[in-house]
Length: 222
Ligand SMILES: Nc1nc2c(ncn2[C@@H]2O[C@H](COP(=O)(O)OP(=O)(O)O)[C@@H](O)[C@H]2O)c(=O)[nH]1
Ligand SMILES: [Mg+2]
Image 1: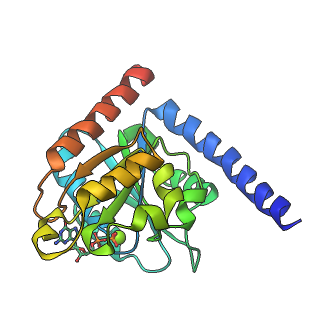
Image 2 (image 1 turned 180 degrees about the vertical axis):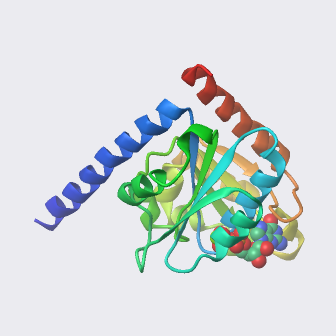
């Protein structure tokens, strides 16, 4: 019985997520669901994307947090349109919350929508929002065993960003072993080593992102 309830919730969520995605497709908006543990660097990544791509793409952000508007305030100071979702205790965003956020965004004026999910390496993996790509950050201080401990997050990722690479000299983190673990779970995944603080490694990842924006535009015919 419990399993049935869970299945109902997930299939209702999936139906709204599909609706969100076709709405985003109609407007040609590439949408990225950014997920990680708290503190791995989601907001820092979004700030880097804004500063590096703002001349090339019209960017908007959905900020998901249990409470507060701290991250949304940072993004808003950059002059970027942002909608905050407070989940009031919920450990992840869902498609219904995302639909409400989309209702409050100028969809005709956006090329790239970045969704910062609630900081959590477990729950967000189960809930599609309507995004086109899932980007997971794993930062060096979290340890190189996390792919084995939280496999569902990595199995569903399109991209894994190994963040805080600037801290490598100070930590024991085996990049090769972590990368092999992810590739074993998910052979298609793209892995980039980056520092959202120093900017190291961001160039390759930003090229990938721009490629995706271009592809979305070509489908959209604009
Ligand atoms: N050394 C270092 N610190 C980083 C890097 N990226 C983020 N941080 C720091 O990590 C902390 C958490 O970052 P934040 O972007 O707020 O993480 P979030 O909770 O996932 O949104 C902040 O103090 C950032 O300045 C990085 O690449 N290197
Ligand atoms: Mg944040």
